[in-house]
Image 1 (cartoon, rainbow, N blue to C red):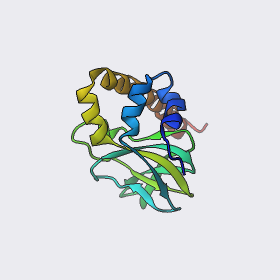
Image 2 (image 1 turned 135 degrees about the horizontal axis):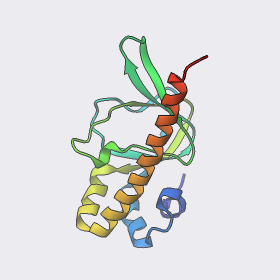
Image 3 (image 1 turned 135 degrees about the vertical axis):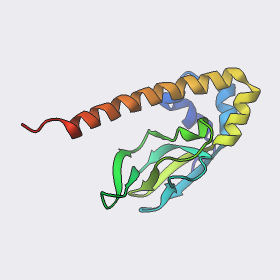
Length: 155
């Protein structure tokens, strides 16, 4: 169990170089969490009130496909990854399921708490938005490659 989450957050690549006082503001919204295999971190349509820094384990992001017989895995994330963007954007609802495929240990951050701190400290808000925009760009580029792979001609 990590008692002081500040050092872990400060060392995470997405937060690298962030001012220590901003890291401490984030720690005030953070807690250690654990999910067992097959347990859902979140479900599609739920209020998006948390995002996660994965410390251990794997999480599959799944999309329900009514014609495909149920859940379809769109991405698997693991140690070092950050899960969740919806906490940033109104109306703050999940558009995918997140399911632990093995024991997962993570740091969960309360999105409403962090949004409030970003409103009070616009410099923190800008840093968070800039870093998550970069994360989203990387994820969208990876999704493009997965789509190209899925729909590439087979001849």
